[in-house]
Length: 331
Ligand code: PBG
Image (cartoon, rainbow, N blue to C red; front, top):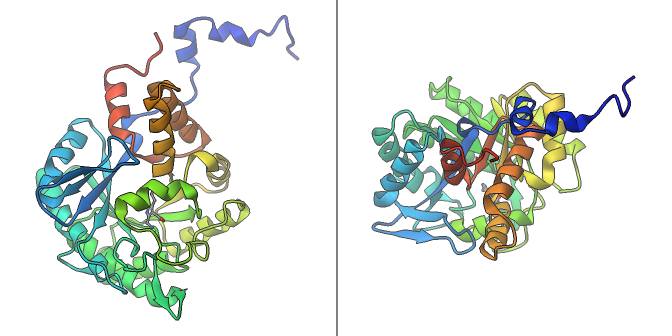
């Protein structure tokens, strides 16, 4: 038994060197994945209004950004495509000459060591903005699977290193694994958006990707934010179907889900620090209401402390810069 005054927890907080000696969680640039928006156009770089500092790049302007990401030591990017045309069946998603399929070789030729992950979903490519095929006004799970699997294979054919299905259809991981294996891609891992909640924090992303649902919402496929036991079932299911990494998304309002997943499974866990989380911090920082660097580092450290191995974040470039120059250290 050790009680005050014998025990004084403040002792180990009394100097910077002691604090750093006993620090339990350390954020590293190698934990980070940077999301990239690529649009099917040329000569264009456009800032996303609700995400200051984040841009949509046309195919021919992508390389400047990729050079930056790579030189900062960020190990991976996750690609989102914005096609020129959308249709009912999201053809652009699985078009071998689609926007993501065209972006991948441009990136890999320049930076073969940069890991290219692709988001696999139909919502940016469908005219109705839903993540699956719409049949009689509802999202048809099983008919969507084939299109998702086809999309994943087309990304890998173009050179993607990993695919990340984000649609929340049942059975998509199994369908994707089967299609990849059938095409000979046994070694391409699947990062499953397993516990993806129907969240208002995706607002800025939908503006960026032009993927606002044209009717209804995504609650019939994305999860109810009130449920964490169900999140574990989703994760368990995706592991059984062959996921190599599972994801919890969003991150900040779901730290308990990350922790429960960490305690329940030994698979690597990714967390997505989503667009709305980024926008909140940026807006407050622009008003001078919070110290941006401190707030970002605190949030991301918390996500890692909760149990995430990998963090997908729009802050990746600034964090990599802070870490490289020691600006994260207290002084
Ligand atoms: C596609 C997808 C979404 C996000 C990642 N993949 C949007 C959605 O489900 O509406 C959100 C990412 C973010 O908000 O940063 N389904």
